Amino acid sequence: MGAGLEPDAGYEDLVRERREAILSRLEEACARSGRTTSEVLVEAVSKTVGPEAVVAAMRAGYEAFGENRPQELVRKLDALSAAGIEAPRFDMIGNLQTNKINQVLGRAHLIHSISSSHLAEAVSKRAERGGLRVPVLLECNVSGEASKSGFSPDEARAAAEGLAALPGITLEGIMTMAPAHDADAARRTFSGLRELANDLRRRTGLGLPTLSCGMSDDFTIAVEEGATLVRLGRIAFSSDYAL
Ligand SMILES: *Cc1c(COP(=O)(O)O)cnc(C)c1O
Image (cartoon, rainbow, N blue to C red):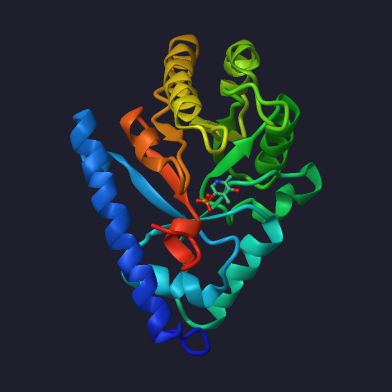
């Protein structure tokens, strides 16, 4: 196993040590908020590293990975299977253009980045054509920053029922990104996401179990505010990221 994709031993140790540090912070955040670690999936964002690093992360215990570009998601899956490694779960977490939808259909386990009704409809249509029903999250711009894409909370509330009825997608929850370098704003963003999910549950009657929020700099805050999936890139993979 792993022929051609053997990670450097020192790097494998780094990824393992990082995972231990991440899990102990996760445990502390869960203890502070009366939650259990089994409620939170730690997804490794592998967008800046190669397939060898994914192998190192799999050995360290990660079971789910996130990629932000369709070509890269497909490249990683293909590299792993060419090396005889059973590919783990890969999620699509980045901006998805409609002309790239077919690349990730049937290959991404979950699409986190459904940022508009237009995109939801396009994914649904292509999935139906392929006889699929694709699990998705709505990307919501809770912080209201102009630089961020996604549904505003009002747009999400207005669109939810219609999106829930689309035949080619299954709404599994919602996703957001918090403002950088501002812990208070991050907390407000994550608690806002949790409240928005409650509104959307009432409107759609769906369970919407997944709250995808929290990255390297803010995942412990996200967990305290109810995240069920955190997306960790630099802290999991980069020795340049200070713990
Ligand atoms: C890159 C990325 C992450 C991970 O960010 P880090 O700060 O490196 O942990 C999470 N979510 C999305 C959508 C990303 O593009």
